[in-house]
Image 1 (tube, helix red, strand yellow):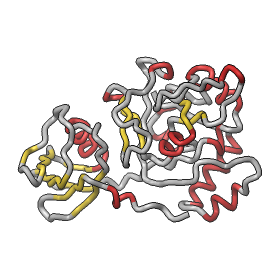
Image 2 (image 1 turned 90 degrees about the vertical axis):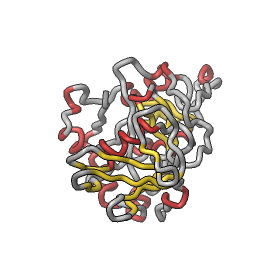
Image 3 (image 1 turned 45 degrees about the vertical axis):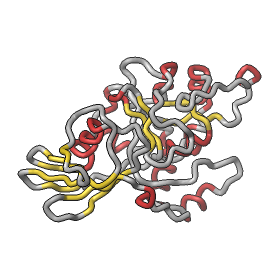
Image 4 (image 1 turned 180 degrees about the horizontal axis):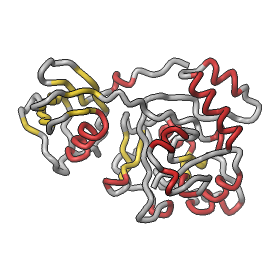
Length: 266
């Protein structure tokens, strides 16, 4: 399956002021503030020795840490020192069904706790009859990224499958979450952020508090899109082999079968 060109629906574009080179961009659905925008640049996308200055090209306005919504258009980024785009790769998120779907304890725990899609707010009114079609337990931390887990010392908080690493989502919301078209910012009041056209009508919503405590966090960042599900009877290995990043995806799938290892980030 070819990967979609996400640059096609960007409406915010990022440039290095000194060279004019375009180094990225994103889709502003309406909820990304200037404060969050600056955090994305300073702590995620760019490596700079000196503070960054970010200017909205059309208005020549310098962006500051405010709760104002980011305007659409072009932004020039400058600094008194060198600026480099990070070479850190995004964490690969394997569709959760392929691992967690085999763990009935994890699935049952997330269902019992949430009872609804915590992103859209839709309650599963069939839960009382034991029917969960259209609702899926999704992992917050991308599955089987043990190297990332160990490198950043997340194991000091959790090392096994726990409900805290899960969210109950509608099937379509799960697909968007796994594709990084929607994310959740724990540092902005657990706000749901869309990084593409808001097909689900969730941009700016707040993650339902039923699934979290004050010490929980949910985060996702990345750049690859995969088929979201492996229904029973599907040729999983063929799907992986023919899809994007097949070697890495196969390694993760294999590790999941050998280890049954999942993690939580809090």
